[in-house]
Length: 202
Image (cartoon, rainbow, N blue to C red; front, side, top):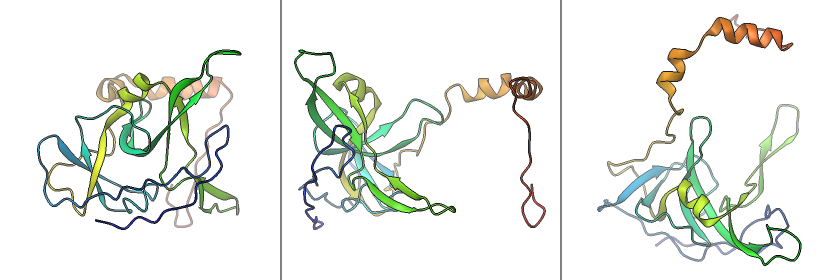
């Protein structure tokens, strides 16, 4: 079992962007997979200290019901439909209007919380960990691929891909007309430009 460092609970804001309460459960280390279990490679620091960069989350794919203070693999709907490990929390919020009862909603963020990661080339700070939500339970459930139940040092032979790819990618590529695309950009006021590196590469 991995030791988990308890962090002080920050005061929550209306945007839920402060560091969330640290989960008190250490994830067990898996050496093999059983039925309904898959792994997912973690390529960021958002799930530390439970899962470190380069480790694999062990995912129980039969459990997609949102649970407060648990880790899940989530898949987004737009673009390449990326997947990543997310920390799910819940709260009761009035999302209906003045005088209405509070509703159970869920938020998705990083276990590591809102934090500065680095600085850009211009010196501006780069942050990570802003939460996403609120989600109604059924809406979030449709995005979740499974609950994280452990950690592994390797893929153990059955790994979830980092993205689902663009929806209808083959059909979209076949229908793409580069001339029409360029003419549309020019007609809307865009002007093409080319970046050339120091070694002459475009």
